[in-house]
Length: 495
Image 1: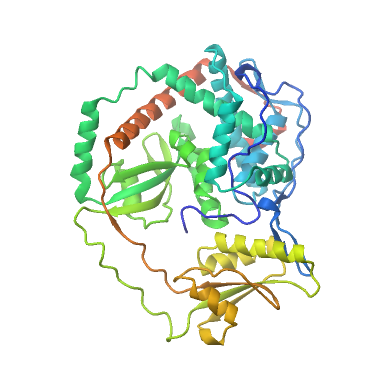
Image 2 (image 1 turned 90 degrees about the horizontal axis):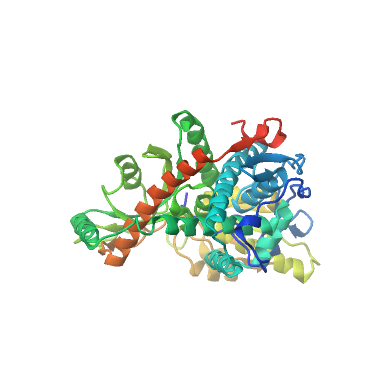
């Protein structure tokens, strides 16, 4: 599968929304006990109101986050010193995580999500308590800037995310509070370690020398999802959690960067798991073995290494210095001249369908085209209940001149393994995809990193280690009381 899927049909895989922010100070962000009941889980509409056809006429494409929650929301789930986490807040965060993760969660998934977000909420409250002690605040401008960056990265609008979160029963305040804690934690780390984390010119020189030493080795741009194992007895549980994340990424079209932001425990989570470029042998041996065996765009299997469990993906690769990258082996022909192996997905449009529904069906077809990265993927997408009434066909190797002229034109603009732009014909909207083997991606030769890139990497490595240690220390000093009779916690902790 590809490491980062462009779009998950039915759920906008985003991480933020740009709506006006009220004045926020660190001491006042946690909901009080007895907060109003959370909205129940509900189907999450497709991003931007995009639609897909039903048997009779196009209708809204949805991905239901079932089963609906039946938890009483005004009870206390956890108390972190003097800050309470209510069921309301837990349900809001779980609904948000389910909405942005890019897949339709099952009952077991929801239990896991609640357990994960409960741990995250506890850590965030610890961060907020520490920020309050240090008199650190987060301004609306800072939160809005973070949100705007996320929206730009996801090429999406605030309205799209508002629609998705509303459909999932999540409040926008859930996201904003999450960002407040994240920004506050960054300020705490800067205040605590700015004098301790020093990247010296000698360290940079040594790293530059090692980078040049690795010039004759393959270079990898790696993304990670890291789940820490704080106690040896938690190893099996964390292993199960990361295997569950892997399964979702492989089977549901979820976005790697979204899962990294939601679940990864390393600072790279804020960048969607991107740790930058490393050369062969630079990572821990267990991690290096996984990366070295991946092709660009592939996802590895979970691996146990220093500190916990890792899930790695390969974004890009550079060949050793001196490699002749102009030698490219063309893929073998997939059929007789003038033919192509194709699959077809038809989104039917009955006669008399209003123009606005035709436009919506075309938008849904564009979503399918963006989400599908293989003929197998488009077949799986066609089975989604949101596309009930669609027609999927394997066409073999048809002669191209026998196809409709508009389809010929659309296919002429594609490369091997790509899908054509949707075409509106008499039967409805047609999406054709080529099943011939993709040409190998262009290869590039190693380019030595700059001093600034080296300095940033060394700084981030030091901060990551210090941040994990600091959080462990704060946890030991914090009184965390989980309500043993709370239905949410009981359900969430069953693994």
